[in-house]
Image (cartoon, rainbow, N blue to C red; front, side):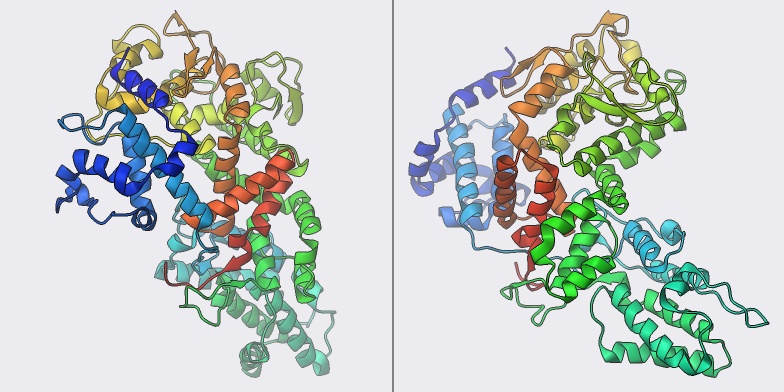
Length: 628
């Protein structure tokens, strides 16, 4: 039995019951363990790795330093601290007590801490939001943001306020885009005064516009257009400033339509359009907690579900103060609207990393059948399953273990499925096949492979991080590379045995590898196989938590049943991060717990998840921008 396995089994046997944890005292039970085993490097004035435990004298101190203690717990569980070369190391019982008490006291603190909706940095529209908003506001078939600099990502998503910076180059792009958009949206008369009005103009004007009525028409246009563009009621002075700008253009000899063009272009470079503002009376007071007004709520909902501006229905409900009273109806409507496809594409593209498919290049010599059409089919299958669960309000657990999928003839041939003809995607049964859920989609299997072979480590890590929300700690600097498969015999699993014998690697691989081995029957581009390097594949294994399985089907059942709550929590946290545009903090645990309880009562339905997020404290409220 390997050393790491022994330690894990001892820790499992030594787990402390919840009832006993209530009786544990930090001062009497935990601090002595730290003083005996950790203070030589991290106490008594020592601060190796910039970590000092001297400041922690009570449980309240641990709560205030929760970020440090979350890391301490992970290192203790991974058997990485104290290091093996230290003479003084806690025994299995002490490790279990330290890890279990830390989890217990932090969870109690998270649940009982004062309610805090958190803060969201005022953030600009990212490229997707900009394109979608221009489409819905201007009624033009145009993708102006394709030339913009790439958006930075944080916490796994590219709509995080803290990283959405504004560079001089981007500002130049905004000015250039505004002029092009205005020119496409607002046609001007020809030399004979005739005009072929665009869809945008037909919304706001009835042509011809008599000269005597143009000022009134322009003012009505500016007021309505600004309300939509700024996503809130506009002040008289905002309308007046834009009218003055348009009048200056006309006074210099330009046409009425050229004045409208100028008003449009100026609006599209306004901070009130480019940024999502939630104005506060006390923006620097972290104790100033308030509910969003209904226009702010409409904007949050629409950018969450549509990645775009609110439509007139949302704005009208907000204007009448009726949006909160009609949230379930509106959420249901929005999830079924074609505009929700943007949510499908962007959320799955980042949560499941489907965007990365565009950059992957499997080895052409080994996988000559792989091409851009197959790549596109792979991504579309996963997006269609997610969209089906969303629009039909199915259980989110279907994403893990659905016995159906969506394929065309090309992808069906890739999978070895019979009787699928034509390029149109359609729902097919997977009963009797080894496939089911996104983890057996070729998209995910290809993403989690190397260019020339499968990667049990990548596949295992993907499940831990994106499905279960329990990522292993980052690998140490001295991890050796796995030797090229051409130099070794046997299956990749057999080749990895030598790699896992390194005690530096063993603790993390104990978690990742069994999961990855379950998918070894799927090659590096997601096709089924029974042999690897000429030898039969063994997909059976056992999770570090004890569950045994024979293959990917058995593992999927474990994930969908015994690990279901971990998956639902992970998905909830990922979607809440996406919805809020910020990383989650300890005080968000209460909101996540509440959403999960609602989902548990309602069969884990997708709509319940989205509604729970929209009605949650961090989504519905905010506090001052500075402080904690």
